[in-house]
Length: 548
Image (cartoon, rainbow, N blue to C red; front, side, top):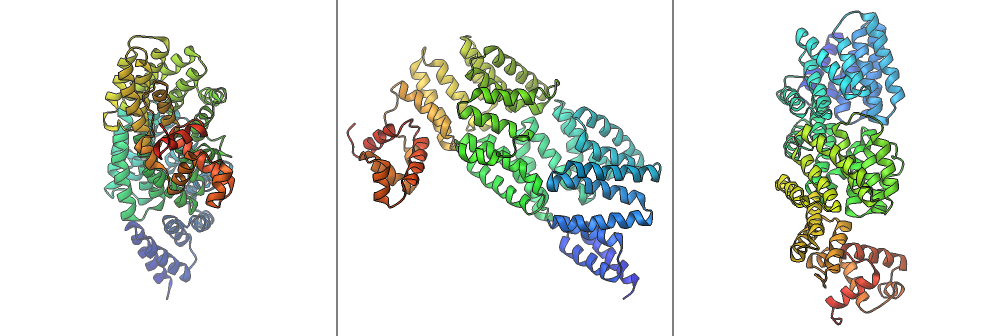
């Protein structure tokens, strides 16, 4: 075979990449390398391996391609590979210093290369990692003009996508989504290189998540998952699962959310390990909402410096009865910038709960007002519902007569997602509002809230609803859904509680350790909404033949 044969393998490998046939591309580029060592063959092989999720091998080959292009004097290609390798340092191992080093190499090569569109690529990709949203928006706008003048459809689509999410984060949701929609049209039509398709999908899903657009999130997640499956995109599939898990959590479909997030974590662990952090922290937030606080604490350990960890960490502190720590975490995050972007919405929503727990009405009013401002900017039903709930809570505590209007408005906004955690909390607030003026109405709202919390598995919130109903003597039995939630082993323990046995006596009967029984009793308390072991025993006695 000759170098002509090597070129044939290179051409065949490139055709396979365009067809998303990653294994065939890998074989062709390996065959090309067997004939002649070249940066083109290493470059193509590295890209094929990236799509096959063999990330470290991919980086090795593309680094060799970078050196080869540089030695040949092809500084534009060397610069573009340096940019790619730089961003990958963060995705693989969260190594920001290594990223900046590669960016410096890319910039130096482009200075030597002279005027070219690669300068626009450099600014766009660099700012996507390092610049605040306002700067990113300016860069994207300028890049878009260059791309269209040069008829570079790849650069145009990426500029639309990065500019779109920058606008969404700043509250310019309609215009930002319009740019992202155009970028998605290019990504799904086959108009642009596969290298950029996955990232455009990720940017769209991230924008939907930030904007609180649950309907749009669900639609694009399904589209992205189908696209990833058809074209064997592991990176996109893992990112989709993370975003879809976030959507399912917000929608109250927690069992499905857990499945998606765990699968995303496993996928990222096999490739872009550093990107698993977002999935882990979203799972931690779900664990806090489920009342599985110890598990959440384990997931959060070591990530306290991550921006994505702020909400679950503050929520964990609040759940553990430490509102001052929760407030400190939130305030530190909000002080980072004087300009409120949509990223702050979850923090402001949680800040209202924290400030009310600390009896700081002024702080709660301020957070609720800022959240309402963001909702008006975004024109998002989810954010409007969160803002209505927040303002309704403040008005309930201050005795304002129009508090109910805010709660009703929140439920109206949540019509498509009224079985969510947020919907349950609005109902519980209505119950608290009516407890003195309309006890029957309050009981009805509390029972509706309890049903929502039980259905999705929100143990601590279910306890709060149950406590109100017990306080009003509106419940004196274990609800069937609570009974059904117990595992077979927990049911055994539950029945033995009715006999008045201690943990040690139950352990001896079931031939397990007392510590195991202690764990089962803890789980039973959470599921039944009981505050003490004695209360659970009383419930068990009523259900299993004890006196009423």
